[in-house]
Image (cartoon, rainbow, N blue to C red):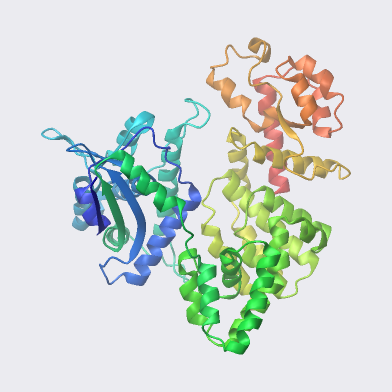
Length: 575
């Protein structure tokens, strides 16, 4: 058994890389949040160390097994290596798309990326790709990511290969980076002047970002000469011990800055916070609070150094912890802790928080904390939360914009509240950020609910409440989402389609207009029956949206499209 370790920046590592990800490894799994955090860290690293080319950002450990002269088998680190390749491919493709006006340095970087960091296919040497995906995404990854393109555009998602095609995870990651880069290069200064006014400036921005990634980001590679040992190393690295989080570091830092007499009081306040939250890791609440009261935005990575640098005296520490205690009830209510939801503010605030929880949103918490610290009224809190819900539902949930970009918007809004900006001005600002009614409606008309029935349930539950406020559909899980046209119909021709493999059938099956709320017993009972049989059972439901279906004579593509249109129009009015 032989084990080697080395730490290298990504430039050195990728140049020497010749590895493959076995098909038995789990597929690519990074989602918008992880990719957005990677991009945010990259920009922050560039700002902090733009004049340096030294290894300063630890990007993680990579474990490989290499037997003889074969390619290294990646055991741990495949998510990071895949993301790096996708990022470099997107940067290269953008530079290719402006090659005639970007300048020589941009064209040289494209060649460097192809030759040194991604690899390519040549007539003499065949494939020299640095990273080879195995399994069903191998061809897609090579053709759509690794091979150069002269156009810069998002990749099409597909639903033709099963419920959640693995290629979609790759495509979605690429699309997130494409959308992020377009927004980054379109940045404007406070006087509305473009930061990167021409292709040369845009190319220079990309060169700087790529250089930061390659020179400043570094990894530690652990290589064994057999797969079994590699997996033992992986298990030991991931299965033992507990890393200190930012909250732990801040707590330790505070204790080091106060007198012995003050230590007990600090400990009591800290214990009170953690006993209420029921969580030893206070990083999240601290970060949201920090971004609520400070103009210097903190990521998870930068939180500890920011707090340590700014909070120095005993009084500042006590004020910090006292403020945290003030926002704990709003934090717990936002998370849905029963006792706090019942006691926290009025019904309208509770309903707004429930909607935000249903959408799995928390990035707005700095604004909620600022409202709490500034003694906002219940009506003001409800109005702001509903505006946030509309913004995020339109832009993030339906239009699939990156959620992380709104974190800074919400942090800025919180700071403005602390600076006595009016609540009305904040609401106006939030409303101006919403995508247009036309774009929102178009996204809803195209929305495919497969794999995201919670969103359909959220929309339909909201409508039921608006139609009949006496109903108590309080939880997103208390009702089931019924396919009016079933997934496996007994007779598909009775629904106007030829066979279950028809693409049009799949599209209409998961359209919003083909979905309705129903209690679980009725859902099970009517199963895959004809529309006439379903209507007989629908008559026993107490939900208004179900009763509306009874008036329909048939159910087919046209009626589904008509109901989808109706849902989209009402959604525009509601959000």
